[in-house]
Figure 1 (cartoon, rainbow, N blue to C red):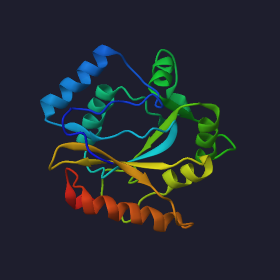
Figure 2: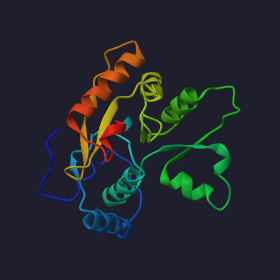
Figure 3: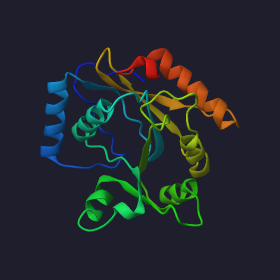
Length: 202
């Protein structure tokens, strides 16, 4: 997708759920300006998809991403254990996009998230495939299994530290039945194009 180089963040299409208000968007933009970052590319015009964010090599990734989220106003769903949804934080987590996972339920995590996609009109689930900031031999495949079972596409977003960009890259066409093989293809694609804060951990 083409980059929007003339603005700090791209416009959010109406297909995506929103979060926050004028103040939070101002706060997010201020944070990006102070850090020297920007969000480039275009958000997809899809109501439901899995967002794969990489390369995840530093705690700073979260800081930059949070400012980017606030600045754009997008509402992302993220995975949290059910026990974290207690008063007075429950309503806040729900509004922010939190998905309460019941680890004791008969259904596994993938099935719980599939049902979340089914029960909501607009869902964008954000996942870091590495699952950790440390170097891993292989990516976890949960994000691909979720996309397959929920029948939604996977959209790639990358942290690119040399250019201080959060890049809204592209939808990835899922062509492999073997999730491990597909995950490694995506990993190779990202590592070829983008550089994290600690490249040796990619």
